Length: 315
Length: 87
Image (tube, rainbow over all chains, first blue to last red; front, side, top):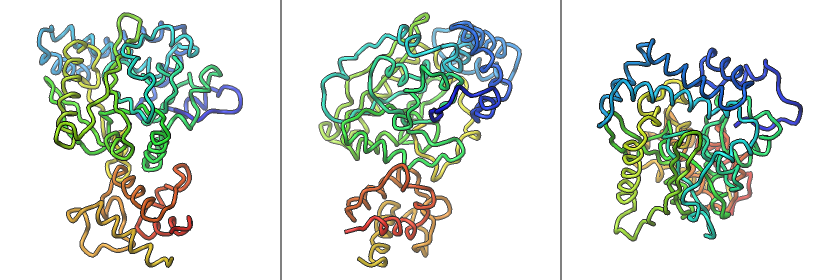
């Protein structure tokens, strides 16, 4: 997330220059333009555009159909178009397209399992996945949850709006700049937050970093990275898996019970965690395959920070 | 505490974290901790940082101390620790 600015909203030039590396110029221009429209016009527009692109562009159509054809119980073409459209919706929600302020988002968020967040002292790791709509941490924060995001930097015209400024506090956004991608200091700060009893939201299936284990799925796989495991080892924080999906216009966030602490299963915990997270991911993909664009269109890792020192396993 | 003793201890911590398979032959205080040297990734480096924190009873500032330069080699990390007044 971009650092907060002290002055007025940035102009078009500054917005343009803040284009995330993962977006093409054309898509970023479209996002800036569509953001002027009231929600959900821009989001619906992007969804239709991405579906149309999947119809006419072989580079989009082929992977979508190849993936969709391996999902049991679905017509490949229909699912391919649905997942392509959801990819557009994902981009829109990632940019908070047309969402003028936290209240607009809060009204459309429903949390299931919120009781697992309440009343327990000590640090908490909320463990997300690249499944369903993005910005789960932002949605939880609109509901008043105090937590810090450990992951990729997020850029959107929305963050420059006054209403979103409190969400851009660097203390709550542990995100190295795109160009730097050097994570140790951010992981260390996350560790400190957890030791102080705070809450971190991070991704189990980060784009970069070495693979701890893999969840095999029809036509794809989810790679689980080590960042959150290291933070858990160093802090003993509770780990609560979190998934999210769209039900119509509403975003449903499901918080699961804490992962069983290691030692109680006789091993180092990873076997039990592999099973628990594997079941969770498989169930999600079975129920909401159209909301899994990261599986149908695996990200181009070449555009991401190179492995090595920069690879952290948290974005 | 001398700089040499801090450096020796930092090198030991790095070697333990990297393990024998990732410790390059002839590794020394100026061997890169990341690519081209020990190939420690960010998660490994946090392990090194926390081990150093315990070993030397120092506290790092996550915003300003843990830069790519400071975590470049065992020597630069030892220099950072020395600047913190290690025990």
